[in-house]
Image 1: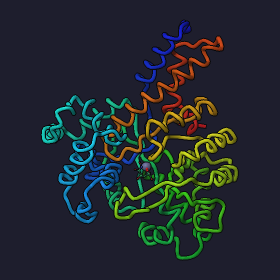
Image 2: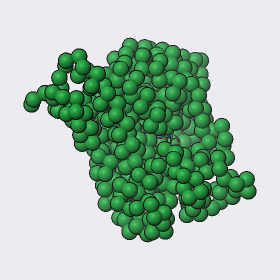
Image 3: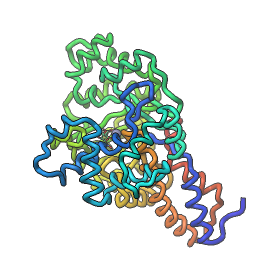
Image 4: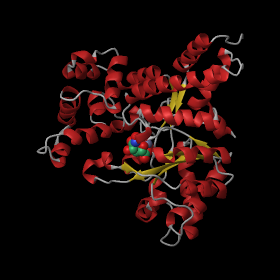
Amino acid sequence: MASIATLDALNTAVRRAVDEATITDIHTHLFPPSHGDLLLWGVDELLTYHYLVAELFTVAPADLTYEAFWAMDKIAQADLVWKHLFLEASPLSEARRGVLTVLQRLGLDPADRDLGRIRRWFAQQDEEAYLEKVFDLAGLDYAVMTNNPVKCNEVKHFDAGAPIPARLRTALRIDDVVLNFASCRPIIASQGCAAGDGTIEGAAAALRGWMGGWIDRIDPVYMAASLPCSWAYPVDDAATRMIDHVVCPLAVERGLPVALMIGVNRQVNPALGDAGDAVAPCDVNSIIRLVAAHPDVKFLVTTLSRVDQHALAVAGRKFRNLHLFGCWWFCNNPSIINEMTRQRLELLGTGVTVQHSDARVLDQLIYKWSHTRRIVADVLVDKYADAHHTGWRFTPDEIARDVRQIFGGAFEDFRAR
Ligand code: HDL
Ligand code: ZN
């Protein structure tokens, strides 16, 4: 295929490649339709996304108490969000714009602001067909879920053998076991794990058996844990012992990556529920020590604070068993996605997974990926132009190859290593 000779043609080719790229969404909170009300979708779930609940309470009148809000049904909550965050204040935040992008991409007209009509449209959708429609609109091959083996409301669906469509892959979420093992003991014991009440080292074989059993059951893409901003490694604590004696040996034995999402400042305002978490810089040196201590474990890492990103990208240059991914949660905003993607391409080239959606509501896949494609295309146009100015020339196939790499290909290569 002929190489691209002009900057204009290069710009066009890059934007086309990003628009047409099939993306793998490597971290979400979606569930299969067969898992009942765990799968959230539709305009009222979009409007009551915890990001928007947090924003509501930044402007709501003082007489709207947290208790009163949580006592409302979903429709009433959504009505308040629509009123305060869309009608009485322009929807300029990323989470608010996202709702409008979803409506627009679905062919609904946000400009008429008719929430009732929008609700009636969603009420006519068939859940399984709608899931396929959303994945097609978002341009995804598959999305990775978050599956917690100690959450009874999730486990019951696996116990029932509820079907999982090919669009969704599992991930074994082990935060609770790593961070709060003592509180997990009864649940783990109820699932047949003779972990006893002794030390983690003493129970390590049984715990690897239990965790391995879940790997056999759900065939996860990786094991995952969200770790707080205060996490440190190694430390004389249960988390370090669980990581060293259970998680990492099992990861090597099964060839499974370990995905770590680090930096949450948990529940600074519990009254907000899922919206009550904040962020603080984490200790990148702990990440470095962990990755260096376990060279045979493949670590997928993202951190929550913008402050950590440069040091993390440099760490990504030092270890072949460290792969960076996503502009996570409070970083999933245009200004930070732009900065992080430039920094990562400059330091790591295409050996990175630039984004994941973290979608909790199915329809969010549409906006989170539409917004990200636009931002990443802007960055790539500059980076290809910079290289073009050296005299190097690209073919459209090479650009398509590179774009696939940063949107899932590098992740698949890392898994297969
Ligand atoms: O721990 C996580 O996986 C985070 O993504 C949390 O679920 C967080 O509440 C979230 O939804 N971020 O987007
Ligand atoms: Zn998440």
